[in-house]
Length: 182
Image (cartoon, rainbow, N blue to C red; front, side, top):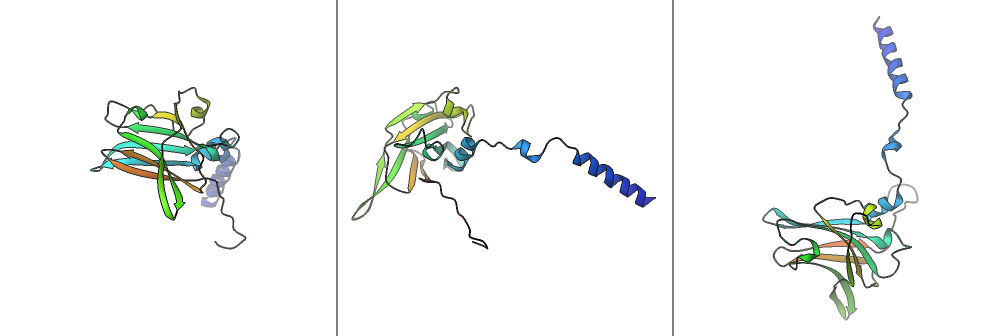
């Protein structure tokens, strides 16, 4: 009796799961623009006394859409400043700079301000394809002059809360193995 009951249960379970019209692939997007955006995104927070004061998300767009962003250095930036009247880049206490390491004798660090900052609205094509979308952040397209280095560093700074840095690989690299372990 137990064998018949067990075999009936297993057969019905097999038939019920085998006839499903949905697969795991139905739940994942194959949008390469979105996937590239996620892999080129960095997030940083300014924290004081264990309390988050500001959050910045940045996506290096030159690796996401090489046709549109092939000159200069472009970033999609989302800024959320907490508990302040002036939000986003309208707040003069917060700055976003690109740090460039220039070889003059020993390395010298230079800070570059953006060439342009364009506020994006919800209907913007760039905004629609980004992994960061919420009602608390302000969204920008930020352009810096092109630099000749492999790693780009953005520095998000506050007069009151210090600074955080985010590193971006200028060219996406994929690690490949020739068999065996790395």
